[in-house]
Amino acid sequence: MRAMFSTVAPRYDFITRTFSYGMDRHWKRTALERAHLPERPVVLDLASGTGDFSLMVKQQFPGSRAVAVDITERMLQLAHSRGVKRTVCGDAGMLPFPDHSFDCVFVGYGLRNFPDLGLAVREIERVTRPGGSLVSLDFFLPTNAVLRPLYLAYLYAQGTFWGLVLHGRARVYTYIPDSLRSFVSIDEFSAMLHHTGYRRVDARRYILGGIGLHWAVKD
Image (cartoon, rainbow, N blue to C red):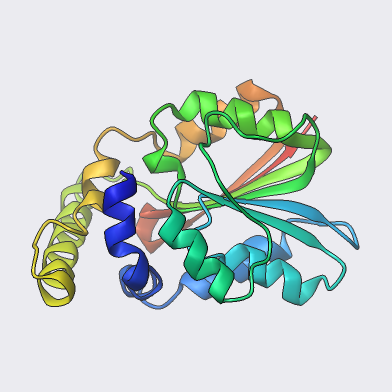
């Protein structure tokens, strides 16, 4: 996984915008607006990629502190070059932070790639302060049985095309649809959050349910 993300890191932001029809920034702004952060929040940008959430929090909350965590050093190097000051190479299943460290944990397109989703969610809950929140944006399979294979076919076609164009390798970006085949649904993830200790859980669907944006407040 680290080797694959090291390969895609320089093109990661471009691919994210492309696969989201250019809506990625809008969705992330919506995620931040509804996070209900305090005036000087301390946030964790988990599976940070090149640090979009860290930079958006910094821009909107000048007194904030954001820590970007990713398993790929190359992603964190790119995040640092964009102005993200605090970066940690770490695993979502064993976060190197004390209990109740953060007002909010943001996860952008990371959930599908965690080897043990339940363990990662419990770790996120552990490092979140009571009353704090989890905000996640990710790909999901549409619940509609007709749309589901069409969406997967679209993701495979896009992934194959851009893999060949950018890297000369067809399979570079097909990890996105591959990761969806064993992933939970939007509703199943909402239920998981309720069972893990979050009270208010809300979800918004985009692209006919192909993208899910979750907000959850910890008890």
